[in-house]
Image (cartoon, rainbow, N blue to C red; front, top):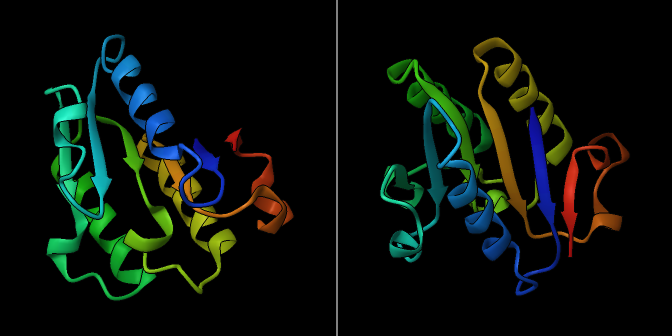
Length: 139
């Protein structure tokens, strides 16, 4: 399953994402990974959540990002959820096709049983119709 938290920059998406991950970690049996563009939120995350600073890995395009995700999945068979803060930035999608990438993440989710929760710095009205059904919070 892929879920989106959407809204313009500065609307509070990261707070929703952090609240959700910290609430989920108490009830989940598997592992959780939180991807961000920095380690700024390290101390706001439960210590059971693995934080990965994507900026350290020289991801230049969306295919590289999806390969990075696949690599993480291949190393952790207990992975149950992945949270992506600043999704457009970390996935190198700032000018790209969000719908195609979300569709690929949905296929990965179905195949490996991992849920993806994305923070997307875009207004709901600017998103393609195909992804609007995945929105859980619109700010």
